[in-house]
Amino acid sequence: MKYILPIIALLLPNVVNAIQITDYLDPESSYEEAFILGQFNSKSGNQAQSSYDLALKADYEKNYSSLPRNWRFLADGSTDISRGSNPADEKQERTFANAHANIDTYFLDDRPLFWFGSGDLGYQDDADSELIKFGIGIGYGRVINATPIARLLRVEDELREHGVVLGRISDPTYLDLAKIIAREDEFRSRYGVDEYKSYWFEAVEEQLQAAGVLKMGQLGALGALQMNRVLSDEVIKIRKHGWSLRAGLGLIAQDFQGNHGDPSIDLVWEYAKPQGFKGQFINTLSYSKIIANGSGTILKNNMSYTWEISDLIDWENRWDITIDKTDNSNKDTTTNKLSSSFNYYITNRISADATISAVNTEDNISNNDNDETDIITFMGLRYRLK
Image (cartoon, rainbow, N blue to C red; front, side, top):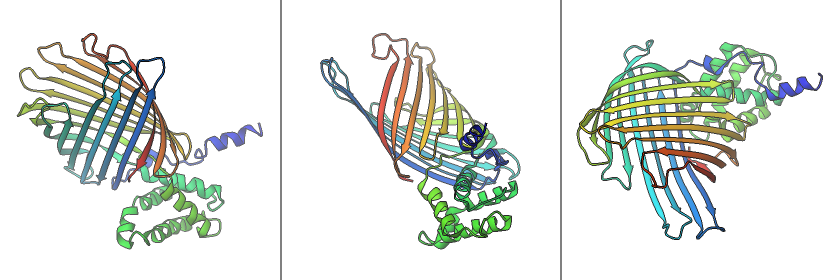
């Protein structure tokens, strides 16, 4: 028994905290993320020619939220270069790019009802034209970015491990400290890139002093060093909780086939829930019904679960389903994609990723190279721009 208890304490360092990620309810927040990912695999031997698959991807997200208004901008792009193992297989190259922006304006600050406007752009190198779409509608709910308290809890673990913080921190103090962590951009803007951390850390120190949990009554050089290591050098995944439902009308100014002016009915449901202190579940379900002769329906569900195995290793899992149903034809397509990846952070900017994915496409067409489920493994490097 004397060996079991220390092991449990090591595996669950945060169980002593009464605070939960979902206790953070401050809607004032912003975050920005940008990544470039390169993945490659190849095979030779026991086949007519060497086969390979090179994937280059880029993702960007900027999110701002407040009581009266939220806005978000997303962009992603990918290029895939591949060649099969048969002698007749030639190099194939495909490029995709998408961008989305939306603004949510709440009718009342303390109520979850809002109206929204949105815009989408899409590019495919094998399409006749680009996709341009606009939308407007009504929504209900709010998703809170709780990453500041996740960063705070990581800082607390380090300060306790090095004996800088002792005693229990109350829930109100946790929340006050998390709000200070969330104000990093404010401190940077006010004091400049070179000086802001000293003022930022000082504000955290004052809260800890008021709570009486600092061993020596101050952070000291050791405490400041550990805070800087966590907040500047470690990667902490976005944490959020809550849900929102949107219903509106869209106008497809132009689609990939070159059609113009088709209206649509759109529904989007987003749900996010942290799993303890290390896990994050996010699900987004979208439905779009194009109101035009010969058009159809697109239903998508994007589910993800991320678990922080350690400060340096994340385990990411995704399940994406797309059902594309075209009215008055048999061109219905259902695509399932499951993927699981381990990300090892070499630095706070660079991670080595190992990914396995399974892709199944049902399109009622035989002998078109997608009749069987594709199992793909990738090794890659991801560079964090922001």
